Length: 215
Image (tube, rainbow, N blue to C red; front, top):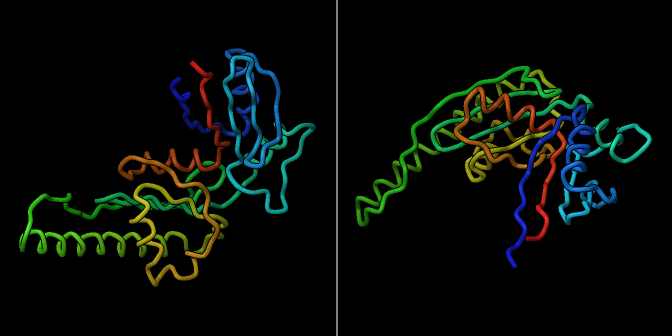
C-alpha cells in the first residue's frame, strides 16, 4: 500500500473557519483532537489535517470558545517578524507584521553553479565559488542589519537555502540578532519582492499539513 501523500498549505487566521468547513464538506469531519504540535482534524474518509499556529503563544494565547477559535485568534495577533530569504545568487529581507511588509530590501550576487571538472580547475572553481558565496552572505547580512534596525523583531523567519541562511546569520554584524527565536523554515523560489510578500503572508498564517486518505 502506498503511503498517503501529504502537503502543507497556509491559511490566514480570519479564513481558518471557512477552510475547516470546506475540509469537512470534502472528507466528512469526525472530530478535532488537541495535539502536541497543534490541532488535529480527523475525517471520515481517513484524511487528516494538522493545524499549527504560526508562532508560540508566549504568554499571549488566543481567545475563543473552542481550540479552533483560539488558534485562529492567535494567528491574527500582530507579531513583528524578521524575514531572511537567501538562495544562490540573491536575497530578500524584510520586517513584517500582520502579513504585511513594513521595510524590505532585495538584491543579487552571482554565485556559480557546481561543476564536474577535476584537478586544479576544480580547486580554482571551488575557491571562486566560495568567495562569491561569502560576498553574497556578507551583502545579505549587511542589509538585514540595516533593514531590521529600528524595528522590534520578535521572531526570525528563514527561508531558501539553509546553509546560506546560516552563513548570513553567522556574520559578526548579526551577532545579537542571530539568537532570536526562529519560526518554521520556508521553502521558496528565487528571492524577489513578490516572493518576500508571499513569505510575509505565509509566515503569519496557520500552517496546515493535509494527509490524504489511504488509497
